[in-house]
Amino acid sequence: MAAVEEVPAVDGGSKAEDAAARSDDGDGVGIPQLAENPGQGGASLLDSGEDFEMVNNEDEDDDDDDDDADLPPLEDTGRQKRAPVQDGAEAAEGKGAATDSPPMPAEEWLDVLGNGQLKKKVLEAGKGPDSRPKKGQDVKIHLKMSLADGTTVQEEPSLSFTLGDGDVIQALDLTVLLMEMEERALVSTDAKYAYGAVGSAAPPVPPDAALTLYLRLLEVSDAPDLELLTPRERMALADQKRERGNEYYQRGDYAFAVNSYSIALQITESSSKVDISAGEEAELLEVKVKCLNNMAAAQLKLDHLEAALRSCVSVLAHQPENVKALFRKGKVLALQGDYAEAIRDLKSALKLEPSNKTIHAELSKLVKKHSEHKGAEQAMYKRMLGNPAPVTSQTNRNKSSWSISWKWLFGATAVAIGGVALSVVIAARN
Image (cartoon, rainbow, N blue to C red; front, side, top):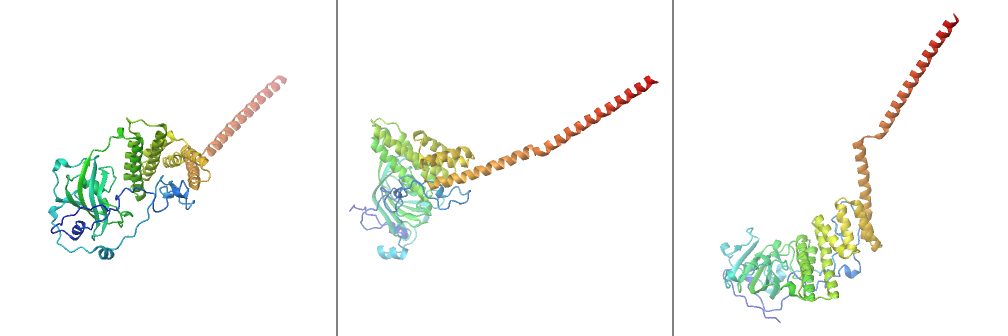
């Protein structure tokens, strides 16, 4: 059992603060945001043997392009089953209710963002401002996380992460940046900078829950030089960032997902001073392709179509028959109005996976849209150019009118000439 640092009592603290500053010894329950084994818990979509989600209703509204069924699932992701969260009464009974105490004066808190939703209070000063960590450095902290009623949901004696990479909740990324070495601090955060409206299964945090965090900054070090990492270390680090991106994607935080995937890509694409075998290079490429595919899915959710298209094209440059990249590229092109090219990409994807119902449904929907679009274009051209039928009829009438006029003129001339000839003959006889 890992020893848990004893937290000093805080005079005059609120109920939540006292509860955060008081705990029994016990083991940590794991890093709060980065699951070491995301495949545990509920079965992932890949475990079912399917590469795409099945479409529940193939006749769904054509305009519902953002429906989750239209997008294939992310690779190698697993959802953990949500752990039941005790209500306040049960938590108080099981852990002991915190005693009431007067609220802490507002001036002792630092309003980190100026909106009152993320506040930090120094409990014990550290080694001075020069010892504060910088963005991009690795830090190690002691973390204790509690709900507003004092229920401890997580205890981590030694939690390591890279500042600014989104490896942890925003409240930690933002407040640890302001801490000094050996500083002890208390942080009060709104759900917006913690687990939001979704909540969390591990640690067990209910939706829209405000949190109190007890922190102590233990270590600060520079992040490892990517050029000196072995191929295996680079793959492990890139996979860690990618899995964090997958967690953000599943929570609907698509911008944070793109950020995590971008960091993972930088790791896979960084130059290396360490020898790499052909097999390791192929494995590193697989990680890169997964990051690009997942990033394209997140970019689609954000309607960043050009960026999503670039991600798909990058995948296809390495793997021309990557079904997910072809599918997503087809969706992007369709949203951009390039129906013909989109249909070609979806047909290529369907040729690779003929039984895939998601591709069938998307292709059918797209062909229908393309037909309607062509019909609308033809109608627009007719309105622009006018109706050719009346013009032809009028031309024929004009031609017919000219024909009649010439015939009449020719006949009159013939009659006139005949009359003159007859007059000459009569005059000659006389």
